[in-house]
Structure formats: structure tokens, C-alpha cells
Length: 554
Image (cartoon, rainbow, N blue to C red; front, side, top):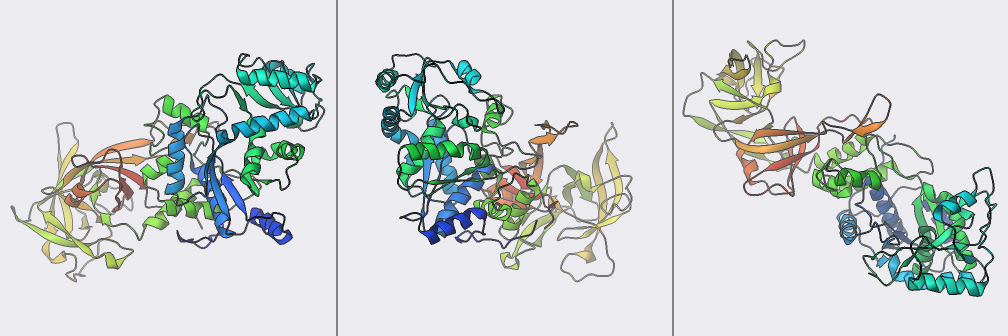
């Protein structure tokens, strides 16, 4: 994948794609009398995920590029699954990504107009009330190779259909007892055109209209009307709606819309090691497999935000993957690359020992300490240095010691010398174990002449490890993450039982002042954020955003 120029947060530039080519041709031909008008139309039946972020960025940046407008519209036509909690989360996600809508609209705002348009279709002989059950409608529909069969209720008179539809609205029938169907063509090669249902009965309270309605429009009927009423010019949606486009166009044609919107489909985002189905994600939440919709392992925008991803990194990712008409799968390593690129010169580095092993420097003076100067960032010298206390007893990573070293292992082992980051060279002399044979302490000696910054160059060492002063270190909780989904032997993605590892770690004392949402690079371990829910004055909990090493190749 070729790397594209990184886009700054304030930039309105986005790369050329086939959707923009269509828009530019429409502008050239003056297809629409008004400006380019797009919309982002989520259904409020769950939290948005990274796939929705692609659609958000596409719709809003397209409007920005052509000095147009973009609405945030909630397609709330199914009262059984929708909730105000999801509405508020979606609004927060769009704002967090850096976008502001021109109008905030609900599909339910148009229920009166949609009903009037349905009556108009009935009067034109283009819709009828059908008494077939849902199962019977499926049986009558036919298959991809066989035409469907017409409903016995298809030829009711206009007067009878109007009366029955009004009774449906009044709540005189049970759920599923009757539906309103478009009258199109039961032999159409496109099954979506075989007299589709456009209204169904649902005696359920709606989050917005409460109990005003007991009939609700189907999405394929509501969608084109919403776009048309709002003056949308380019209705951008994912590829699974391509077969629904003839129905979209049919609704607007039969209602004689003068400047009908144009539906354009693009390939949805697929990521490795990631499942992006709101139904599946909701099941994870309902089954308590995760902490909630904003669990840092979740691919939801709320989860990515809590994980520590920045809006700039997600917008950069969406820009890099571009827009395609063909389905493909993007390596999640690219998303991780984008957050590394964004954070590398933004955050300061700190030393944190996740799995501590005590080191005692036997020839270092007792009851003495000194301060070491350590740079705050390798990437940005302007961030300066900080002072870190150093004394006789330290903690190092347990993984930085091997009693019997493997080949090319350059860290601590008996007799070997390493550099302590920003401090001295030390040599491991003695290994202390408990009764069970577990290593509990290393006894080392240091060379006072090797203090960092002293100019010492008499000898070189291959290993540099980090540490914290045992006398001043503070305890923090660190949560490292693997992928929530992993591939099994059958090539299927399944829930990873080891997707989170928790450490009772030791850190530089400065991290005791970390505020919720503050990001750091933990030296040699990766990028971390103080968890927005769990971090307070008494407890410091850090979520791993991403490791330091990238597997993505430009």
C-alpha cells in the first residue's frame, strides 16, 4: 500500500476517489441547483465502530471539500432496537472525530410526511395492504432463479387500501397482521423489487415519538424520502445497499421528485482481527464478555477513544485506506501505525516496570540517592529533560534477566554488564532465590565512572534496560491488550480469552500525578493512556494504546 501525505487535523483536503469524480461531473453538468449535500445516517441501535468512522469521515470531508453541507440524521424507524443512549453516544463520537453537522435530524421527524407519501402511492395504485404473514410473503417472493407469486390481496381497490391503511395507523390490528407493500414487479430479477414491504405494524414505544405511531416505515422506503426531503444530493452508503438502489430510485420516481438524490455505494471497512457487526458487539456487551461498549478492546469509537486513540490518527487512517468499490480487508497494523505516527512526537516518555524484579547495587552507598537527567522524548528535543531519583535498590523488568541466557541475549545474566537507562553500567554478580527456586533479587555492582552524560567511552555494552528507584517508585495498574478476536485453526475469528493482561507495576513517582486521559510513552513498552473511568487521585490505571514495534510496511 503506497503511503499518502499525512493530513493535518484542520485540512479539508481528501484524496481523489470515484465518488468525488461523480460529484465533480454533476457539478460540471449542474445536475443539482443547490450545493453538494451529504449526510451521515446511523441507526441508533448500538455504538458506532471504526467502520462507521470511515463513513463519517467520507461524508463530512466530502461536504467540506466542495463547500457543501452534511447532516447528522438518525434513521430511527425501528422502535424495538433503538435508544436515546445510542443517540447521545453517536453525537459524541461525531464531535470527537472533529466534525460538526449542519442539521441534526431524526427520520421520525418525517413520519407524518412519510405517511402522506404512502397514501399518495396507494392513490396512484402503487401500494396495497397485504394480509399475508411474514413467512407467506417470503414463500411468495420466489428465488434468485424463480419469479415470485403475486399476493391474493394485490388487487384490492384504492378505496379499500386507504381504509385498511388508516385502520393500521389507528392501531386496530396486531403486529404482523397486515403490512403495506409497494406494487412493483413480482417477476423482477431483483428480489428487492418484488412488492417489498414499506410499512409494518409495531405496537412499541418510540424513543422520539413515544406512542404516537404504531406503524413504522421500512428503511428502504424511508431512506430515499429522508434524503429527498433534506435536499441531499449524494447519498453515500455501503456496498450492501447496491441491490436496493432500484427501489430507492423507484420511490422517488413514483412520487415525482424533481431533483432526486443520487445513491452511491462504496466498500465497507473490513479489518483483520476485528468483527464489525453491531449485533455481535452488542452480544459481547450483553454477555459481559467485555466491560461495556467502551471497553478498550472493542472496535467502537468509544472503545478506541478510551484506549487512547486520537481523532487525528483515525482520520489519518481513513484517509490512507481511501474509498473503493471492491470489498477488501485492511491490516489492523495500519491503524496501529497511524496512532504511533501521531503520538511519537506528542507524548513524553516515562519509565515503568511492569513485572518487577529487585536489584540491589551492593557497592552503592547506603542511605544515599542522586538525580539522573533523562530526556522526555527521543523524537522532540524541545521537550527537555526530567530528573529521576536513583539509589541503591531498584526495580527492573523480570524479562530483562535470564539466569541461563539464550544466544544473542544482551541483558542481565550472571557476569554480564548492561547500561541502566540514563544512569550507570551495572554487572550482575549474584542471584537470590526463594525456597521454591524463584528468583527474587539480583545483587549487582556499578561502575561510578560510567554515569550517563559523563563522556565515558572506555568500553561499550550492548544492552540498555530501564528501571525505577525502589525508594520513590509508585504502584500503578497497567493493562496490556491483545486482539479481542483471534483466528482459530478453521480460519474463523473467535473471542480471544487472553485479550487483556493486567500488571501491578512500579513507575516513576511523577506518574502518581497523571490525569485521566493523559498519554505517555512507557520506555520500551509502548504508548499508554490514563484510563478515563478508573484513574483518580488514589488509583492510577493505564491502558496500552499500542506497542512500540510496528508490523505494518509502507
